[in-house]
Length: 321
Image (cartoon, rainbow, N blue to C red):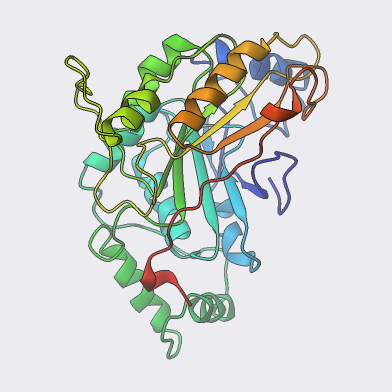
């Protein structure tokens, strides 16, 4: 975790949660690396999931706006992470409107469960900070501040949760990872149940072709083409409160092959087909890398597919300065 990241589609990482466990074959390489580099420092893929309260306030110290990948080597919505701890993470994200937080999970069904529940108050205690820090953060977020008790007023406002902070938070992106058709069919419908400023897919490591029928059907729907039998089976086309200007329910797609020793191959035609689907639905697509020994390699990917596009969500008027 740190103020900088080597991941090409983000700026920094923030990991108040460490540890994870294998859920599908997309995890195999990471699990193997953790076994090889079992130094007690990096993330552990043993099922030992830990929540680190002392890391919660890290983004509050970063003044320069940046994209932040949340829990880059664990899963925010792992079944061993209590919802109460996720409440505290979202409280921090709400306190940092200058940043964009990218949450990527292989467990989107738990995201839907979390968002559907009455979460009650957000709980976030500034155990590791000073009054001076709190004054500075309040000033940076445009809050009226009048003495030490004002931070309690700020947290009282935040404690109203869904009433005070209208969901979806404009600076939080929700995504799910899919490595093949089976995981795409399983996970994407759950993601579509979750309102978000940006919903995105990370098709990495891409281990097989993926037909993103969700994108194709959405494009046809908004073009006024509704052939018989093309009902979306309860999918959400355009969620209420969405800040995204596009009409597709998926707002961004990342594609990449596996990297490092023993990488599994990715066929360029799989990637090309995904790019074509995204372009047809006017969804920005970010090509991260070809499969290969070194991360970030273009490899066999032709230049016309080597795109690095980002979504452009609309920022609400209340958050503009």
